[in-house]
Image 1: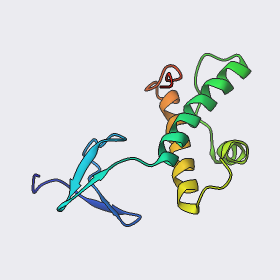
Image 2: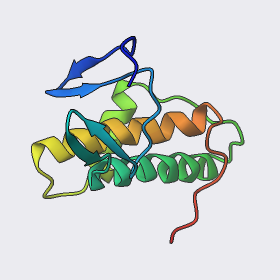
Image 3: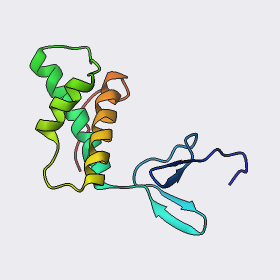
Image 4: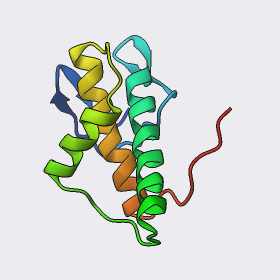
Length: 115
């Protein structure tokens, strides 16, 4: 690893914001290996994508929009799965917003196929 790689500590986890670490990919921190994967992350991200496309279809719109805090709060009341731990709930919500924003930014142009 390069000595000039910038690290930040977020929620007790050391991350390198300039590095691209996609879901499900292994990485090494010190002498330990980890997998970047948490079900709440993946499910929240996918739910944000699906919710955005469903909203566009329901509104008969072609152009994605970015929701505000009030809109996201309402969506969380409807879409947030019950029974998640506090940590999983926070991860799910953050990644729901990331999924929604991915559609808005044009990074995702259709609902990903399952399986």
